Image (cartoon, rainbow, N blue to C red; front, side):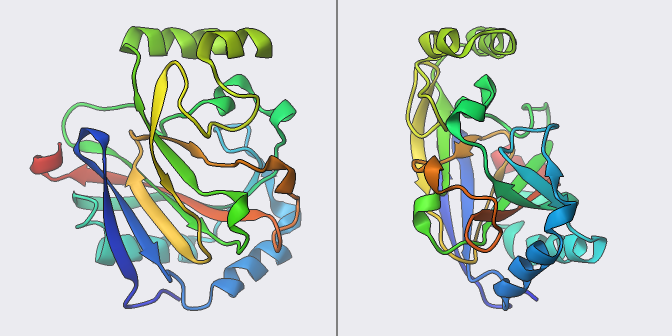
Length: 237
């Protein structure tokens, strides 16, 4: 299933974190797209997280296979001593800008920072050919922690225009710096490319052309999104 000799590179991110980029991850990536096509009716809206579209949990055997790939190829360059898979999902981004909630218009973390060396990592595997569908942007926080917390709490009740005035966020996906965050890196998408990063790193889908998002796993922005526990090495704790 997985390429035994993938191309791997490491990109530094703020706060001594790293992004691991893996090209040619799967030996037959079209089979994952076919799985999504056959299972499309089983996808459900992701109302429990920030993902802007429907998702489907992968079968346990595939989730375990991703876990083993991380152990073999990604754990060391990510600076982790130990990892264990939490979940892996097929995901199809479909929401248009007017459909986005306020907090989907700014970057986010997959997990809050935790004391010690325990944390969560994340993966995105791009399963589309049209690079205009967008990769993943990474950010650093430029406001205080108190201002960040206040913005998140207020966002849930604010009208869209008021949230725009507060944050400087654009009308759609978070593709640029605003009053709270500075964009520091963009992971460009490529067919069968996966990126791995600590869940505490601020990020967002880098979608500049939302009009291209369609509800079709064969031509839309299909990804596999995975989340895993990790225990960090002391050097990057």
